[in-house]
Image (cartoon, rainbow, N blue to C red; front, side):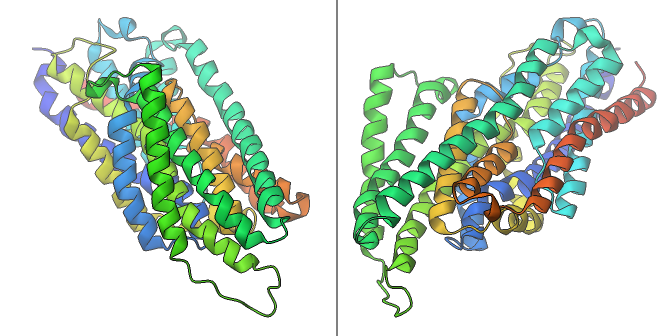
Length: 422
């Protein structure tokens, strides 16, 4: 009787527990990043952030999370090399989940916005290289993922810089900033709806059984963008205009208009984050379930059961509710002072970058992307607007994450091998 047949139920229970723990870490650390700009700019409260995250994280994971899950599950370690000893994949994925989850717990306690993608990829590479041999790791794929850790913050930072400069030029430098904001903000709202819809329809819905042509996707995205813009205009018209003697240009009221926009960008960011980062918890869990259920047959493209996504979504929400406030503080107020207009530019830039990456199956780091976008907004105001000490701590925590994930995964891998044999 094989080890997998003998201990199959135990492996699945452990995978679910560790997967939930990992999803909790994603919620405590990464969702807090995604919501940090919205809460930090005081556009929404923590309670509203949690409600938005619950709904849109789950939708993102379910509708657009399939591509990245495949990469995390089968794209980093060569499945063919494991056919002789399929239990090694089970040990490896269990140890990767536990290692990444423990590192995220430590980082969240310190308030460091680290990368869950870094953590899980580092852990999988660690077990693959030591447990199976250096040739088992798809180094080309790892190189592509690693390059995205540099490209994604640069891309998000550039988009955020351009967006914020456009806000400055079109609104804050206008003769009547409030009137300019009321005219211009609906177009930004349209952009949010259009971008998220476009990438989801072109890339994300194939595993739900919907295949649209590019033209159909474009049409639906424009219609959805117009619908979202309509909701934004209704909300915008409800804003109470307050005239203050010390606010000659009405900038306070302009920020209130952007506060409406931030609700939409927070939804977009939660959706983008769910589509990309639920894979970090769900990918290895799906791999374990697939191997156990097929009694050791390793299939790189096994389907993810629906309840696994629910488990991942539930863990993410639990993490945000219980422990997310520390990282929210770092991202929302620590790097640079955020207002709704600055937060909007950072969040939309980050969401656009993450959703594009998710559509191409590249597991980028939401953290790196968002921090890059916040830096871009800060730079648009000049170097003095940035808190270099906080940025230094964040970069240091990023550098530690990969080796920390790999080291812990190697330790747990040998521990599971010793307990179960094989």
